[in-house]
Structure formats: structure tokens, C-alpha cells
Image (cartoon, rainbow, N blue to C red; front, side, top):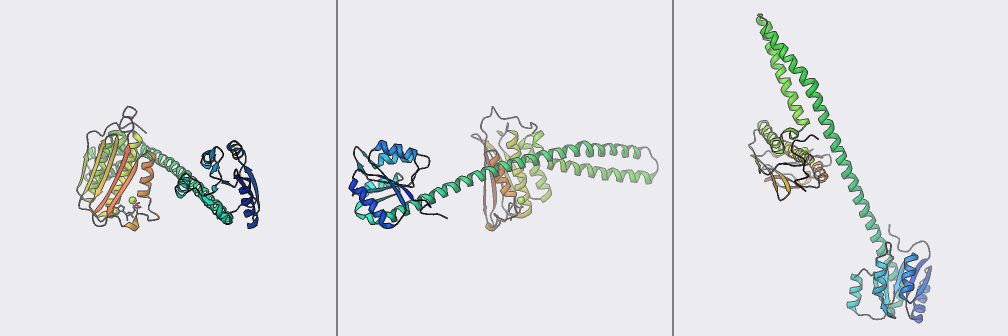
Length: 370
Ligand SMILES: Nc1ncnc2c1ncn2[C@@H]1O[C@H](COP(=O)(O)OP(=O)(O)O)[C@@H](O)[C@H]1O
Ligand SMILES: [Mg+2]
């Protein structure tokens, strides 16, 4: 809630070189019944000292003073960190001067001939000033909270990737190793028996093991992106091929040969973006074909996943419990990139990730471990 007038008597500073006019202003304020203290100055030096050392609720200033103008006074006030509203209370100064003054940030202009309106003009100036302060405060809070959210997202993403990598390692070392060893033993048993039933069981077990080994490799691939070993282009190609195999939708990857030496964290963001975009295509789009473009030109890596499916329904974009696209937007930010999602009902969807790659010299080589 904006409170126009503070609880304490209003602390007013009046910059005015005519004592008579100062008296008139004081009388107008008294008549209004408001509680106030009024300090009077008529030199720029005294004004500067006072405003630098004392907090005022509002400043009233005549326009033309001895050797300076209200604009000189305002310039000094405007650079104070917490300055009060500043109202011109002056003889006629002309519309242009009044407009210019407002443009510089002066709160309002009131002619001395209109002195009865002074309390009202002051109350409005304070109200607008308070509202602006509250808005600035809210904006600062919002920016801080967005920063916190971005930090948290980055932290969560990093933890998730680390955990995925650890699980993939365990599957590889423990489960994968054991399955392979058992497969050799089963094959040995199959070779060393002449009992047809035993051979049949050994062969069925070997098939089952092959299936389990394939499944654990697939799980590992999903958990730990193969970009770590083979580079971004190969990794996205692998995503595209498995998508095509799984869905039967023709999928083309066009990658410019320049996509090399992308920093590891950017590769991971690009990989996860392609993965989520393709998952969405498979789940929702029902397309005829899918196109993926991967390019690095003028220091910006771009990845586009485009389908010609049904398009995103406008209401679905902000679906409360859907975090796929929202997560991608946040992830892009963690590497100073951005995500554009364009979609037309019936015409398909395109998800574009762009990430500036600052300096090739600083970029870590593709496939470098996390
Ligand atoms: N390629 C696409 N084609 C059609 N609709 C899509 C596509 N991608 C996303 N959508 C729509 O946008 C919604 C939000 O997607 P997303 O944020 O990934 O969340 P989720 O996949 O968990 O629903 C989806 O529920 C779907 O309705
Ligand atoms: Mg999704």
C-alpha cells in the first residue's frame, strides 16, 4: 500500500530567495492542516549541504534564484542515492521549461499564483515517488529471486548430471561386467555339452543375456551422454538415429563441419536440449519428418530441432506441471545462451538453442570428461 503522507510531520525544504513567497507557502501549508516542519534556504551551497546531510520528505524550489536555477539544485539532488521528490514552486516559467524540468525527473511544477493547490500537489508528488520506489524495490527483488532461481537450477542440473554419470559408471562396471562374464560362461557351457536340452537352455540364456546387455547399454547411453566420448555431432546423430528407429519418422541431421571444440558444459546443454525436444516430438507432435540443424557460425552455436507436426497448443506452453521446455529455457541460461520456441498449430514446432561460444582458445576439447 502506498502511503502518500508519512506518519511523522512532513519534513519540507524550501529553496526560495523571496522571504515573502516563503511566507506565502508556509501559510498555504498551515491552512491545509497538515503537520510539517519547513526549512528555508536561499543559496546553492546551503542547499547542497542540507540535502546531503538531512533526509527531507520533499523539496520545493523556486525556478530562478540568485546566480543559479532550480535545475542546478535538482542536478545535485538527483545524484543522491535516496533523494526526495522535487517540486518547482515558481512564478511563470513557460510550458517548455516546465516540460524540460519534468523530463529531467523533477516531480511537478506549480505556479505561485496557484498556491492553494500546494498541499495537493505535494501529496501527489510524494505518492508517485513512493510508488516508484516500491516498484524499483519490487524489480530489484524480482531480479534477485530470478538470479537465485538460475543458481539453483544450475546447481540441480549439475547434481543430476553427476548422479547420472555415477549410476552409468556403476551399471557399466558392476552389472555390465558381470553380464559379460556370465555370457562367456554360458557360451562355454553350450560348447562343452552334448545334451541337446542343455544346449537349448544355454542358447536361450545367451539370448536373454544379450538382451540384458543391450538394455544396460541403452540405459547407460541415456544416463551419460555419449558426447563425453564422441563429440556433439556424433552424439546428436546417435539421438537422431535412435529417434528414427523408435518412431519410424524420417529424421535428418545437418551439421556444419565447424562444430568442434565446444566447451563440455555447452555440449551437455545442447545434447539435453536435443534429447528433450525429440522426446516431445515423439510424445506430442505426430510429424511426417524431423530436421535437426547443428551449426557454429560467428561464435554462436545453434541447435534447431524442427518438426512438421501438430504444433504446440498455446495453452499448453504454460502447462503447470510441465517442466521440459521450462527446464530447457533455464538450462540455456546457465551457459549464457537462450532458447526460442516457435510453433504454429498444424504447422509444427521449432526449438532453437543459441549459445555464444566466447573464445575458441579457452574452449575445452570435445569429449573431455565432466
Ligand atoms: N514438438 C511438439 N509438438 C506439439 N506439442 C508439443 C511439442 N513440444 C511440446 N509440446 C506441448 O507442450 C507441452 C509442454 O511440454 P514440456 O514442457 O516438454 O512438458 P511435458 O513434456 O512434461 O508435458 C506438452 O505437454 C505438449 O502439449
Ligand atoms: Mg517434455
